[in-house]
Length: 314
Image 1 (cartoon, rainbow, N blue to C red):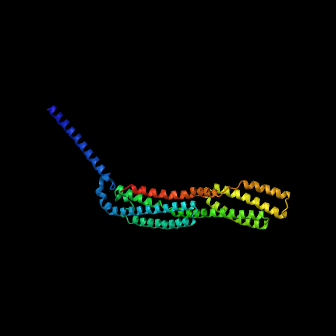
Image 2 (image 1 turned 45 degrees about the vertical axis):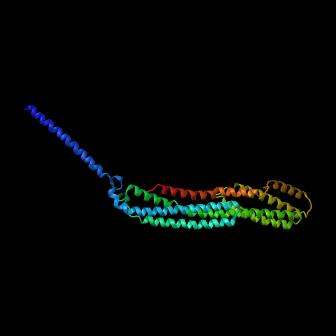
Image 3 (image 1 turned 180 degrees about the vertical axis):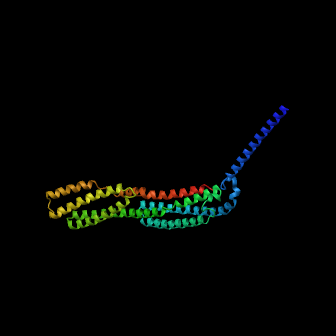
């Protein structure tokens, strides 16, 4: 009897252990099920209705983003055309490219506004979207929202680019105009027409002043090292030539010690002048490679980032 009772007690204990284990496993399963939030892949049925309603609208927003990428790409094309025209010294083509860029910027802004409208029309994204949409769809929507912000600085970027390009385009004419007036002044001075020579140097100085003002504005974004060297060398020569003709005028054409000194200074300053106009090409290339080129790169980078979002798929 004692053995039978002992066996009965042992069996009962084992049964309770098995039951406790089954209850524990069942509780863990319930807890795991409860931990499946609606947006996870494990409970797609909970987000099916919202996903079905939201996905077409999100697809529409993605189509708008593709249009935005194309508009930004076309803006970049206009920027590159403007740079080419600037370096080639083709001012009419430059202006045409800038006008085209302005129209394409308007297209960027219009497409961005359309994208904003498409995103606002997506259902179940206000508030706690994770309670309604699947994780993947909610993440895709968030990427589209962030992608739209990428174009926010393009308008200011293009405005600065256009202003700098137009400033740069005026530089060659001013430099050539300066050289022309200085050369005329030298001819008048050689003919002892000192008063006329000094007036022509006044005109040369005016061109230098305008070119210097443009240089100061361009210096904020572009490399103006070569331009500055050109301006400094020509300013030094103009000052020496002006002093020579003023001294000759005062000496009434006689060769005095002051005239000899002024002539020697003019000869030294002449050695510092550019040998030809090829330096203007270098100046324009420097300006284009600086801030202007960076502005176009920024546009292309924006397009690449938008395309990256589109490339992440559904």
